[in-house]
Image (cartoon, helix red, strand yellow):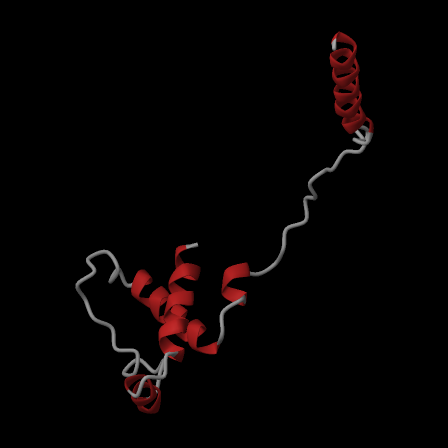
Length: 108
């Protein structure tokens, strides 16, 4: 019985030690100093979301987002057409999805 315990402990120790043999501690990874050009999140947006992003950016630069009580007409300011609004009223969720993507992008 005692011999079986010794053999089991020895095998477990060898199994544990063998895991470290496979690791290579000599290789190192260094970060590059290359900066990517462009805005990653903005570049991922679609056409409608970029329109909403521009509108949000306009509201931000005009200080409208500080109070949260002012309104901004996307049709009047030329970001969307009346046909786009009618499609949204009929249940087309394209503008709604674009709005969600744009909010995430704007906050990042």
